[in-house]
Length: 265
Image 1 (tube, rainbow, N blue to C red):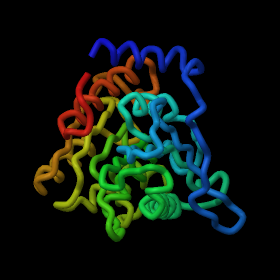
Image 2: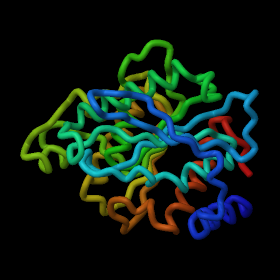
Image 3: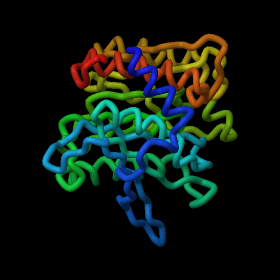
Image 4: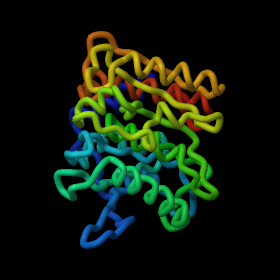
């Protein structure tokens, strides 16, 4: 793991020294006058004749703000693990006057697009993972409980995700009582739910830790793996800090290794 820590340390403090030659922009959806794009990060050793494990990472922002580069360092980390990484944008209230439902619709359409164009982007569509932070974590989760033909997400990597959008949730209280069970992960878990790992701060007020524990409890009842790692004294978005970027990435390595998708190095 020593080599991994050195890579992660370098990614945080010397990110600009890493090659950007293998980062490209693509449009996955056009709606009215809006083009929705994603960045695609290829490993430095990219071989156009190969198909790659792929991770899709949705940024956070409360469905109102855009942090398109939030997972740029994480994407480069995944590149070192021989993954293609994809970071999309989606419609948000401040730019498009939309609700979380439209954001979820965009997430679903991205998955459909990537499955339909897997060969074009060298994606192994049998080895697609999805992740995200906060609202982006909810988007990642939402892609697993829609029935999209011929697709199955292999795993979820979630950073302080919103898991409850039902009545009396923290999500609902921030929206004057408005709620939606349709996009609420905690209300849509089923036995086909993929294995997941969740990183959460004990002092998170955007999604209280008891909701994460409840999510794990329900997942366990369905026999699905849900690893939860709680970081004492940490609030929302803690994973963006250098210390926790390194710590959570180390745990991601262990998680993916346990599933047989990378060699733990």
